[in-house]
Amino acid sequence: MVAIQYLTMEQLEAGLDDIRDAPKDAGVVHLIVRRPETLEREILDEGQLDTAEGLVGDNWRARGSGQTADGSADPECQITIMNSRVTDLVAQDKDRWHLAGDQLYVEMDISRENLPPGTRLGIGDAVLEVSAKPHTGCGKFVERFGADAMKFVNSAVGREMCLRGINTWVIQQGAVSVGDVVRKL
Image (tube, rainbow, N blue to C red; front, side, top):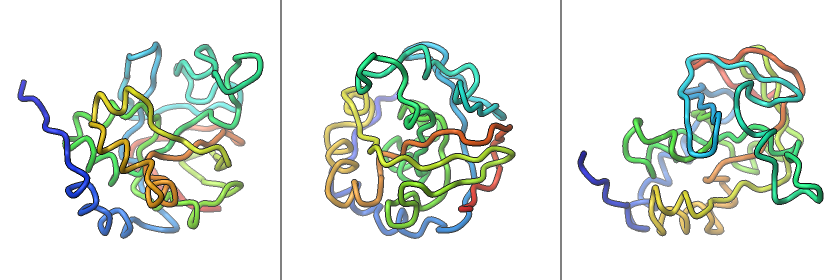
């Protein structure tokens, strides 16, 4: 296996125009990833989104959160979505996209300007609502994609464009599939 060279900040910033050109009102689901256990990933062609469980079979609920007073799963951070153009840039290979740790990878502008908190997204049969809680990178993101990638997604521009992704929660359960249209409601 060939080692991936992390991209420099200059290389990452060179990809911003392509990211900015992502569709605004309707996009496409390119990848669905379930995390049954910590550090495990299952790539799915179709998944079920549930109002209580999030992505059925994902460990979101069991894993809990350090951000809630009682350590339970944060209902506003049930499903994480990342712009597939950003993922493709930092991962450099689609076989590495799942390492970002999100559940849905969509080709769509997920910036705060385009999808402010409270925006509803229809995906397949499901409806999600965008959370106000920011989604930021962690140490695992640095290990997998490099320190510059973390600085890139958490920079002022990165936060404005939600380059690390967005948190959402399921308000209408249903099936979602790779290839489904993601649309603002």
